[in-house]
Length: 304
Image (cartoon, rainbow, N blue to C red; front, side, top):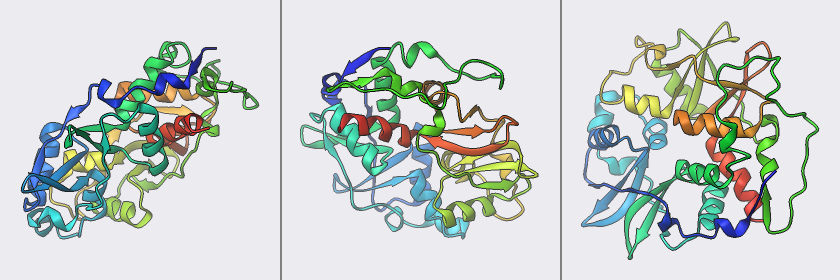
């Protein structure tokens, strides 16, 4: 299996095709920010005061700081929910340094300064693409895994291990079972739950993803912060009469805990989603892996 030198990660992030940022005045309404993020497909938006960035609003901010009063929330100034401790990096920072920072702090979007001005944004998806390209055998060539069977051979033995050479990252790290990567507990809610109940549960447990099930065992769909941003905010009144299933992603991709990490990476990148649900051999959802956790796993190897 291929080994990649850590020096391959010592390239400036300016070499990556980063998205340009669009800033809104800090006096903007929350509805204005929602409209921009929906229109551009952004997961975050920077706020400025007289041309100077003063804060950032993310999908998580919108969901976690939703007040429960729909129209009042939309008409409020975005300054009431923005994060003011703005972390940014220079475009001369290396991919390795950026990955360690975003992995350690579990950051999904990070503003980038070019010539002293914040004008770009790097996301965990940009880093994921970099990883895929650097490991053409261990990751890229494995492809996606969608219609799998519990009897297939696309799994790795649970006792699998590897030794990493000094100064290198072994491609074998992407062939470990997903259960050996950091996994998270699922929030399960009944398919009959309202969108209001889902948001309240997300806020209470500080988790941006809920799986909707029937009888707590049959996976029907998934609803995330991004679903709420794209399909609910500014488009649908939020109350106990509006069912969450109307806005969920039905029949989401899943993997077994013993499937290897490469499949999760490729599935996430192709599907443009940030979580992969793990199920047991009866296809009952048991946990999930988040994209930020994968970035953290790679960054840990880069920092040792």
